[in-house]
Length: 381
Image 1 (spheres, helix red, strand yellow):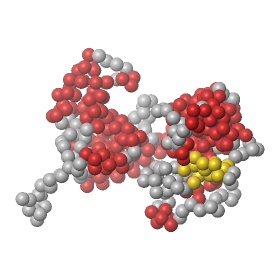
Image 2 (image 1 turned 180 degrees about the horizontal axis):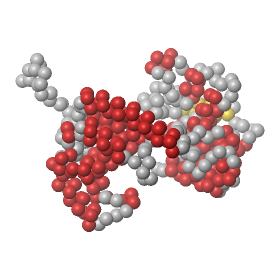
Image 3 (image 1 turned 90 degrees about the vertical axis):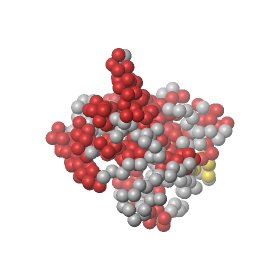
Image 4 (image 1 turned 120 degrees about the vertical axis):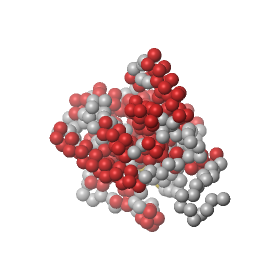
């Protein structure tokens, strides 16, 4: 029996049931898990090249060396480079469990010096430093992995890593200033003139492609919604009340448990500017895809609608680059998140009398903090 007074006593981990583990694993969104896996896979490959015998667990070392030999015998290029080793490491990362010694990395060997060396050498394909957000993502991915493995980072490691991250952010900014590059990270917000131009061009496209992208864009702008919210919309989440369309989001990034799922998002018609009218966009889309209206299926069915929208979006910009450049838009300056950024910017700072910030946060599904979220709710103005 373990003596509770002994500070060095062994703590036996009692593994929860598979159902409990599955529920606990839901605290990280699938898209975030995919990003974490990518970052940790890249780190794992770097560790393998640095010193496989030192950093790889014996349980995977032989398989990794064999996979490495296979890759050298059958070299591939591009995204398929080191295919055998990548597949092995990706599978091993998916099986990490703190109830087992299943992590492919000997975590005790990863000191601050090792991890910081890896961060320093991480570069873009063109050799430039990554963005501040990218470095933060790498650290978050590492924290996710060690937590999943049941390993506790030494306090000194944590302290040094925090200091290093602050310094790295300043270094990234300094590099951009010296090179004359923009300090802005991510895609730019879409202003109203660009939004109108994009809507006009989408209306001129073939009905099937144009109707889909037009409605997606118009809803993202008017709902101030994330692309993920638009993709998850069902016909059962949409109603017609009095003179407007009403949408409900069953969950969002800031409301994963659906506590605010009954809050309505009102969207009104615009008879003065038909190209940006949400009701007209919805009608045209349903007429182009009549099967959508036969049941309570997803409004945008399909497995890859996000990339479908992005391809159409960028194709429109490229085909009309001179008109977009006249409005300050370059080829890659806008993305799928730009309409949400633009709509929020327009209502908050694009007019002299903007709505209350609480209303904007509620519309954009942003958290205002635990106290404000508890006391400030949606109400008809």
